[in-house]
Image (cartoon, rainbow, N blue to C red):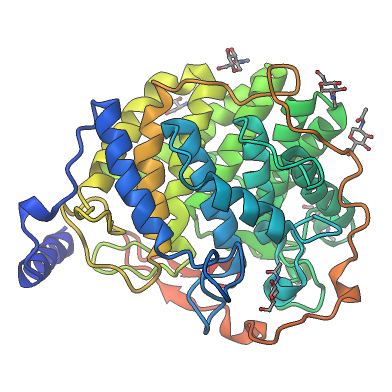
Length: 465
Ligand SMILES: *[C@@H]1O[C@H](CO)[C@@H](O)[C@H](O)[C@H]1NC(C)=O
Ligand SMILES: *[C@@H]1O[C@H](CO)[C@@H](O)[C@H](O)[C@H]1NC(C)=O
Ligand SMILES: *[C@@H]1O[C@H](CO)[C@@H](O)[C@H](O)[C@H]1NC(C)=O
Ligand SMILES: *[C@@H]1O[C@H](CO)[C@@H](O)[C@H](O)[C@H]1NC(C)=O
Ligand SMILES: *[C@@H]1O[C@H](CO)[C@@H](O)[C@H](O)[C@H]1NC(C)=O
Ligand SMILES: *[C@@H]1O[C@H](CO)[C@@H](O)[C@H](O)[C@H]1NC(C)=O
């Protein structure tokens, strides 16, 4: 604890040095919907300063990157547009709807429209593709305005991602599962990781619920059984990072990132809502329990694998994870109403922490439990903004309570069960840019975590795609 005190002291010093006084912090009353909406608008505006895709000469739909051209990989923009779709859903502010729709359609890349754009081949993981797919699925579920008829539709985009991934399910290595990377020549192809598989599971579960087509539900069962069968989810509902095919996926990387748990928890709640099955209910309960315990010490979210007491070693990707957890939890509270009384107070204490890190111009920090802005701007900062925006806007889940739509309950997005069928697998394509990351050698960093127990672990894939 001494190190935390020292850290807090250094933050206060930093704040003093930068002349940040109480009056320079974002003022928000978390008991008032209007106050939340107004503060969220400020944070959203701050976030969108990092998006240049609407400026002349820039590429529509991406955040500046990939490294070294800018800090962000392609997937993070997909996650950002998902965040903005939720922002609209909860607050009703449609300021960014136009840019969001344009980006979502453009990055799907015609004619296949399956979120496998050639520009990003060299770092394209199933998880990267899947984060865009989950944003498209969300658009269908919240009734985000449909694109013109001659453009691809939200539901069909999610189905295209699902279909291309189901076709890549691989039976030999580790008796199933998706590889992390899509092109076999990419570094990291031999890693069969949790995120690739839980993102696929998430899409399958939500498509099952939305369309009532049981083929999707069968895939969701299969993806859960495999991920848990290889031990990436243990009996206490810890969610680990993945393993390699050379070891038959038994060399499990025990690091726990909140993005894996969040995407999985959301998936299980969708299946529970779809089936009303006690097995799925138990999974929701167990995952929520473990998530609360592990990621929310004292009710405020901490990305424990890399947000250590005395230092933060989270990369750009990891700086965006808290938002996915807050968004997932809000949705879980709706899909699995028995969790509501546990989730809503948790979202509130954690959002309160998040807001204590925000300056009046909407600049928010990464640490939410130090009582001020931490000045952590090096690894992002779009991720910090996305997370704060998510923490704030999801508080309106109470006021704006609405179950995700289905085809039978008001959803109007038009699907195509065969979407993505004309996608070329990426080994048939030549990458059109060379500015992307190199081989896998630089990607696996060994990190020493100085948390209780002095755990040694290998960093997960998130720095890499
Ligand atoms: C791919 O990159 C080129 C060159 O920067 C750009 O013109 C094009 O719009 C990009 N396509 C996508 C889908 O991002
Ligand atoms: C490889 O892992 C799978 C899944 O856990 C298991 O079913 C299979 O028996 C393992 N194969 C070997 C040779 O250990
Ligand atoms: C259900 O989904 C499967 C898998 O995508 C698809 O092959 C099948 O055509 C769908 N069935 C209907 C009735 O849409
Ligand atoms: C959840 O956690 C509580 C205590 O922390 C425990 O009593 C309960 O059995 C757990 N429930 C499940 C389903 O894991
Ligand atoms: C599914 O979600 C709806 C909306 O919150 C809820 O009314 C319904 O009870 C949920 N189903 C189950 C099985 O909990
Ligand atoms: C969705 O609903 C529409 C109209 O309510 C219906 O025409 C269509 O067949 C449904 N689609 C599926 C996949 O069930």
